[in-house]
Picture 1: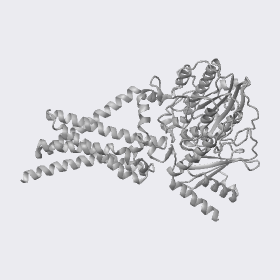
Picture 2: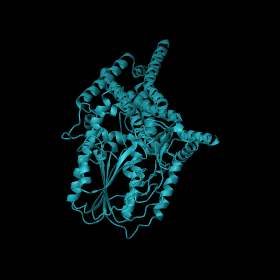
Picture 3: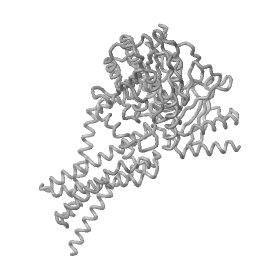
Picture 4: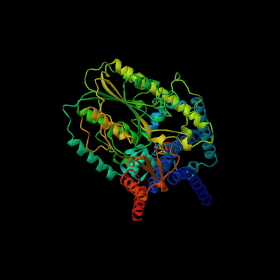
Length: 636
C-alpha cells in the first residue's frame, strides 16, 4: 500500500511539474500582453481557458500515444516531437501577437500570417535576411526543443507513472474523454465572442469580434453601428447627376510616400524624374502636399475612399468608388500588398467590377509591384465605358520589393527592425538611401502604369491622382517606419493631379490647409457629381479663407489651424501623457520649436474642445481622460 501511495505521489508530482512548465509560457505572455501592450485584463480568464483546452488535448494525445504497440523509446520520441511542436507553435503565435501589436497596433490574424508564411523567402530577403540561414536557425531551434523535451520525458514522464498505476482500458477512457472535452471546447470558440474581451487567439482567428479595429484605432461597436446607419441614410438619399461628366479616373496610391522626398517638390535627389517630365509636358494640374488623417494604411486608405476623419470611418461607407458606380463607371482595383487579410481593407470600397491584390496569387512576392503591371496587361483596349482604376504600390514601403535594376543612391538598409531607434549613427543615411531607392522605383512603376493605360486608350479622357496613404520616418527624432508619430514626415503626402485628353481640371484653388479627405470631393467636383452629404472633405475648387483639419495616431490627436493670419498652427496632444505640442509650420516647417506657451489660453482651450469632439477613435479610457482634461481647461 505504501509503495502504491509513493507511486501515485511520484505520478502527481511529475504531472504538476509538467503543468507548471506548460503554463509558464502563457503566463509570461499575458504579463507582456497586458502590462507592455496594454491589453485588457479581461483577456486573462478566457485565454487561460484556451490554454486549458490545449492542455486537455495534449494530455489526451499523450495518454493515447502510450497505448500504441511501440517500444517505450519510440513512444518517448513521438511524445517529445508532439511537445516540441506544441511549444514552438505557442512561441510562434505569441511572437506574432507581439509583432502585430508593435508594428500595426493589433493582433496578427491567422490569415495575415498565412499570406506572409507562403512567401517567407521573399519577405526575409526584403528585410535583408538570408532564407537559408533562417531555415537553418529554425531547424536548429526545433532540434533543440525536441531534445530538451526528450530528456525531460526520460527523467520524469508523468504518463509513464500513470501507466504503472492504472489499467490500459481506464487510460483509454481518460484519453477519449480529454480529447472529447478539448474538441467541444475548441468548437465552441467562435460563439464565445471572446475577441471583445481581448483574448488573443480569438482576435487572431476572428478579428471582427473586437471593436471596429483600424490598426492603432478602434471605435466601440455601438458608435460604429450609428456611423454605419448614418452612412446608409446618406446612401439611400444620394441621387446621381444625369448630366455628370464621365472622364476616366485613375488613382495611384504609393504606400508610405513622403511628399518631401520627391524631386518634383525640390528634393535634392532625382527621385521622381518621370513625374517631373509629366509636369514639363503640361499634364500636371496640381502638385502640392496634403495632411493624412493618420500615420498608417488602415485609416489612410479609408480616408481616401470615403472622405472621413478617423473618428467617422464606417465599416461600409459611401465611397468614391460607389458614387462612380452609381454614375455608370466600371471600377477595377489592382493592389500590390495584402489588402484582403490586412485589417479587412479589401472590403471598404463597396462593390467593384474586379479586385486583385498580392494575396490573390502565389507567383510573386505579394509586395512586388510587378504584380500590378502584370495584372494590367490582362486588360484590353478601352471600350468607351467610363472607368476607374485604383492602384496600390509597395515599392516605397520598407517591405516592398526593390528590383535589381533600380539604381541605388548609396549603401542602403531596410529599417523595419529599428523602427524605435538605433545607436548606429549611420543608420538614418542608410535608411534614407534604401527609402529613396523605393521612391525612384515608384516613379518608374507609375510611368509604366500610365504608359500601359495610354496604349489601351484609357487616357483619352482621364483624371489621374497620385498620392500616398501616409508618410514615413527615416531616423528623424530617432524614429523609423510609421504608426507611431504625427510629425510632418509621418503625415505629409503628395497630392498630384494630372489631366489627359478632354478631361476638365479647371477651377482649382489650392489652400495651405489641405487634407487627404479632400481628394475624393475634388475628383467628384471635376465630374460634376454630387458629393455625399456625410463626407468631411472639401473640394479644392471651393474658395476657403480659413480652415481646420484633423489628424490622429493612436493616443496622439491633433489639428492644423489655418485661421490665424500669418500663422499655420499645428497642434496635438499626447492624451496619455497630457503633453501638448504646437508649431507654426510657416516659420518652422521642421517642427523644431514648441510654441504652445506662446498661444493664447483661449485658443488652446478651443483646440482641446475640438479634439475632444473628434475623440471617438480613441479607446474609451483614453477618451475619458481627454474629456476630463478638457473639462478642467474650460473651468479655468
